[in-house]
Image (cartoon, rainbow, N blue to C red; front, top):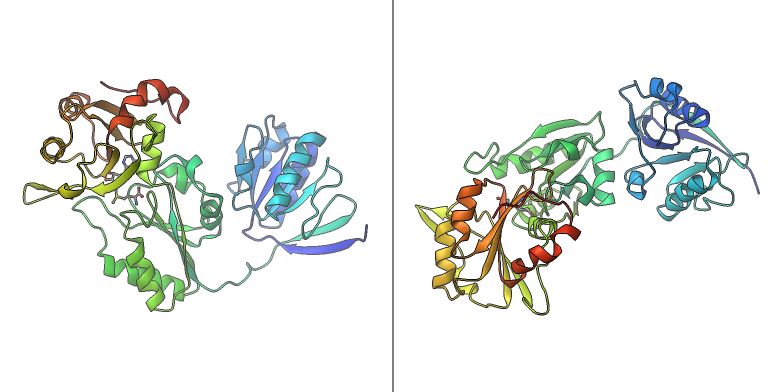
Length: 384
Ligand SMILES: C[S@@+](CC[C@H](N)C(=O)[O-])C[C@H]1O[C@@H](n2cnc3c(N)ncnc32)[C@H](O)[C@@H]1O
C-alpha cells in the first residue's frame, strides 16, 4: 500500500473516538491538542479517559457504538481494542465517507482518504477554521426525541456558528450542536411571537451574509405548518445560500409513539394533515374536507377548542363513535396520551389535564393503540 502523509486541520471539527482504554486516551488527547471537539464512545472508560473527559470539549458517552454516533463527525478513530468493533466503526465510516483510522481493524476504510494505522500517517494539527461562506440551513428538528433527527440535521448542527431555534426544540437536541455555536431563541409561543416573520427573515440573511453558518432549527418538518416555504423564498430572493433539511413531522412522530398507524388497509386509506385554531371564539378548520370515514385526520393545534372540534367533526359527518386521541408532548419522555371517541375524548382530555403541544388524531386507526402501543417508540403513561 502506498503511504500518504496527511496534515489535517481539526480546529473546532467534531471528531469521534470509540474506546475507553489506553489507545483511545492517546487518540483523544491528540485530537484535543489539535483543537478538535471530541465525542468518546466507551462502554468502560479508564481513569485516564475520565480525566480527559473533564474537558468541556469532550463528551463521553458510556455505552456501545451506534451508527448514529457518526452524524456530523469529520474524523473517527476506532480504538476499542476489539477488532470486531473497530471494524464496525470503520465500515460505517466508510459508508458515510468519513475519514477513519481503525486501530484494530484490517482492510477497512477504503474511501478517500483511506487511513489505517501504519499505512497512512495522520498529522493532527490545529489552526484557523476552514473559511466557509455564510449560509442558512433550515433544519427540521422532529417532534422532540433526538433519535428522530436525520444525520444531515446533526451534521448541520455540528457545523453551525449560530442556531436560531423555536420553542418546541428541546435542550436534548440543542445539546447535540457544536458547543461553540451561539444559540438564540426566536419564538414562537402561540400569541407571543418573539420575532415578526419579516424581522426573522432579515436576521437570518444578515448573519449568513456576515459569513456565519446559520441553522434555523424548527420543530417537526419546516415545510409542514412551519412557514419554511416563506423563509426559504425570502432568503433566495436576497441571494443567501439556503438548504432545507426535512424533519419528522409531529403527526407522524406522535402517532407512531402512541401506537397509531396513520394508514391501515382495514381502517384508513389516506391521511389528512390539517390545523385547527380559534379566531374570535370560533374554531377555524377546513370542515368541508373531514367527512370521509376512511381517512385519518391529524389535526395540529387542535387542543384549544377540542370540544368544538369534536362536535364540528360529528356535524360534518363523522360518526360520534369514531376513535380519537390527543398526544401531548409526543415522542418526548414526558409524552402523555388520552384516547376515546369523538363523544368522550374532550372529557378524557380534561380529566388528564393535557396541554400543548398536542396532536389530535381521529379515525379508526386510533382503535389499534391497545394492540400496537407496546411496540412503538415510547411506552407512554396513557390516560383514559
Ligand atoms: C406550528 S405547528 C408546527 C408543526 C411542525 N412544523 C411539524 O412538522 O410538526 C405546531 C403544532 O404542532 C404540534 N406539535 C409539534 N410538536 C409536537 C409534539 N412533540 N407533540 C404533540 N404535538 C406537537 C402541536 O399541535 C403544535 O401546536
